[in-house]
Length: 230
Image (tube, rainbow, N blue to C red):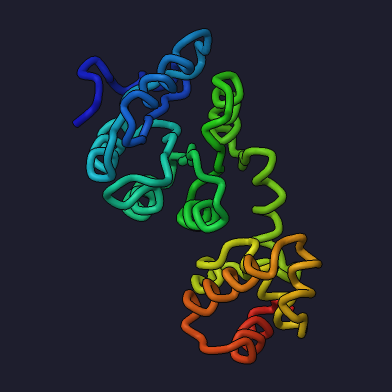
């Protein structure tokens, strides 16, 4: 275990928000702990872990108010921690804290039960505020992710209908390309519309074909239409 032996559960009713850190980089955990413990009297770090198994065991033990959760770890990442803990600890709030702002990462942890998603460019003051807000019941996202998340969970053209794991595999740009492709645009027209090169369009189409296990643009068009992407 990577927990500090002095870590202990915050006493009930003392007004502090107990926070647990999950990240496979010890130096990063130390930095976050230092930021939260410096001048933030209402937020207290009660433990930390560097792997999925350590996190599951320690969060069960500490039962913190908020878990700051990395998305990518060698043994499964944040979504796996959520899968194993959310059903048995519904009162614990999970806030993803990741270097990644990739669509598939955001969607995966939010659908797994995280209450928000912030990137590691966040300041210590902003992070403390995010912890307070998710603890209070708000959903919190880094500014550039907020609009994307709203789009993904809406019924707009190009948005992923809730609970469609196949669409979750596609990045936002891949969905943009697929939507135009399904409307009959040629590769050159898609490139002009999205301000990217024809070669980049081809790369995205190849990736979509691979992820969906389809064979050609006509099958993709039907697939996109079935999922309201057109």
